[in-house]
Image 1 (cartoon, one colour):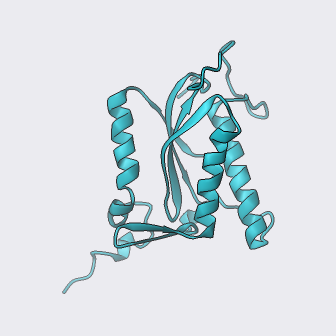
Image 2: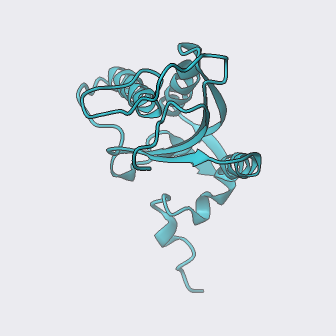
Length: 170
């Protein structure tokens, strides 16, 4: 959203994809998610995101083979806001959604590159998708979407094998 203050208290839905949609974090077998060590690192860092920031809380989230969905609640722990803030290139705003996501992506990339001994290698696609959650009905709908994501992997446009599935004639 143009000129939206992403430090505004509320719920935000984010989706972050891997570089070139590579399936790095695990696999879906029979509708069940099986994270590998890289997927566990993503999960740990997402939980750590809230542990090190008193102004946010983590709601429902899932690490998929080649992307991540999460609900993030800003200013849920009583942190007072002082003045509206607008993030600008090169001037991160502490506690803003873009700064939180950038820090998360950076921490995950650093840990995974250390684990794989692939320093400097890109892990995530540039940017991310965010959505301001407007009400409890939408929040509950997004929670369900996140929880159901592994079972819907067969149909997911982010599934690189989707184009090969279901196109076979008998």
